[in-house]
Length: 284
Image 1 (cartoon, rainbow, N blue to C red):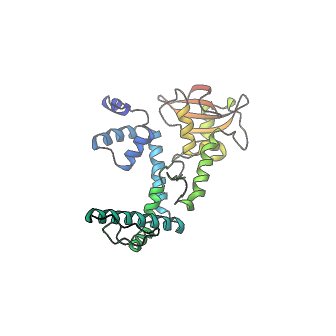
Image 2: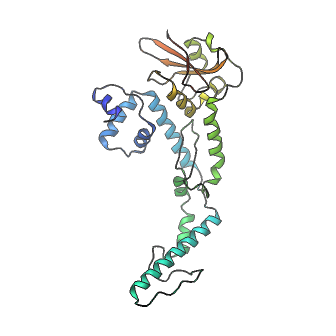
């Protein structure tokens, strides 16, 4: 039984489901009973709703992209492999039908004459040229959510059919690693800040925070990575975030809403987010 199942049985809001479960929920592949349980959790979990909003943004961006064309050199290599495979299949069928040894195939086989999976290579090539968007979907084996940015990766590594989008992947990867860097711009001493100060200067609205105040924590992906490392943090998503320093260390200040008109200020080290430098609960 999963954590969300146990919470759902008691009618309580659960911690945010893992990214795989949320991706399955977003894609509509869960069975009806579990889909309903996850929907109940999402309705009470702001962090889960933020992740789903990022998935929506990524899906919409993928759909808006132009068709990706396969490089001609790669298309020619695929055609050669398919032709060779088809010739081998035809040779095997002939050897089964005739008692004498099969004829040795030439090194550069022509179009297959027997029954094979590919009937016409010209037709196959034409269909492939019209399947640009399917190739894009296949190439998007790894999608990282973060303020509408996407990272596209392939399992092959050598021939990347999504080469036209390589710049998008590079920029997103660089943004993802920025969460451990020292904040840039005007450095604020967070030790003097209250939760209300941080709330007023760096509010998180619709999953986004002002970059000039929050630094790399303005990006949803970097923020979620940092939040996942903070020990004993509230389950609710933060309402504000600010970059700065705390006793000479680069740090991030998060404000979490609590019940009874209270809010919790947690300042963590920017180096790993797992080190809590300050943790106080204040009235709103």
